[in-house]
Image (cartoon, rainbow, N blue to C red; front, side, top):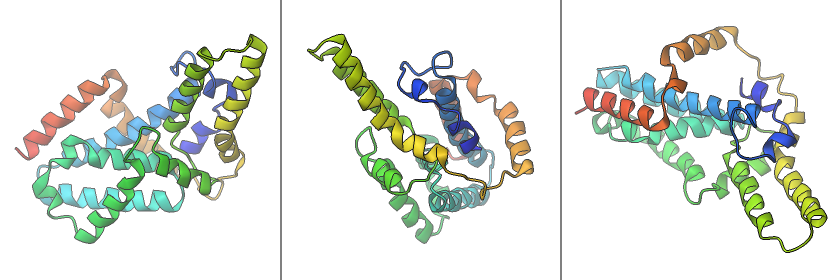
Length: 227
């Protein structure tokens, strides 16, 4: 599912901020898919009143993250890690106490990929090593914005500025382009899973809420199940 969106992202989109539905529809769709997975994971865990059931779901999502890491799907991997680290889930002390220590240790180790600076240097390094992969592209987007800011201060003429811009943007897009060229046919789409996510997507209606509204809503659910 991630690849079907990734393959449509163009060089022009990645080098053309601001990133939004009108300007960069495929980049925005890839980001939306990432955000949907995060919100889905959080919502599923908070659906259950019984602490044992919430713990089982956290175990499921940690195991899912481990599998995503194996197949180099960093986009969905980061989405799951972010979900489990949201305040709404992280604060569930009684729930986490029922998660086996071996799994929480593996989870914490994976979380190192998304800690540190905004560019997630360790994650980017791993993505570049593991091509082909399904990358988490937010770091590449921040690189594009940095180039834009740098060029505003560039003291040369417009022609030289345009040439430098093209070189820098090409360098940023290169890892994504390599991933797009790879054949992911060995990862078959499952129609049942696609149908499930379509139904869940309609049910959650995530994109009618702002990020802050989502956080407020899930935090309230979290307080309800574990005051």
